[in-house]
Length: 294
Image 1 (cartoon, rainbow, N blue to C red):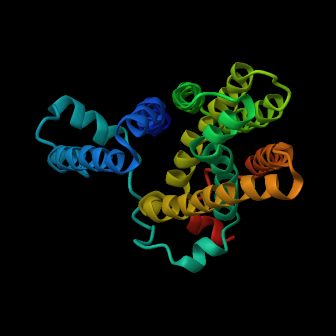
Image 2 (cartoon, rainbow, N blue to C red):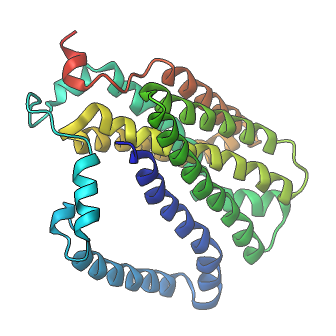
């Protein structure tokens, strides 16, 4: 448990670095080979990685052929111990009646609402607003993902540091609340920028903040889900994907209805503020079954 934050942050920083490299590379491939061939190239990369993953990954450390005995013993001794009194499966009704579950879902909706803008509409937004060339836009849009990777690692370090000092609740709350605050500030400040560079700097601050919320969010799911962390995490992630869906629709429709992108950024900033309020009430030391019995 003492390294849960860093473990989550390493995972998510990899996805952000992948996106950062993909933005300019995919843009180059699109211009050079055309969009159909670009999809074939990405498919081939995916197949190669799937084969590697199948032969390398194991669900439990004791089954991995390349892990040392010392490392295996350390993992087994320091991971969260199973609770013999906990039910093997958490029924949907239990999650549906859990305030913790609803709050972690809504705050993750808010986080993905901000992040998915960078993954979907940031490229055309920058290109149209600042009259950029396609390759130039691809380079600019990679910066926020690098910021996200750094933000994820910083949050993971902060989660574990605070937890080791004996404050379980604060180790989840503080990194997430700082992250949502930075996301709101970055989004609002980007509205005042007259250059693409200035806007990208503040978008990078926003994604840095949004990705600071990932490690505490997923750690929180493991905290309250325990043996059923998969079901709890999956439910939270579903809410996050709904946030991504809403973003993909909200940005163009708000632009069409109002003639400006400003309302979208105010909505996104407001959702980040809402998430901060939710985190003040979320309790990582209250597993689902204990919470439901009170």
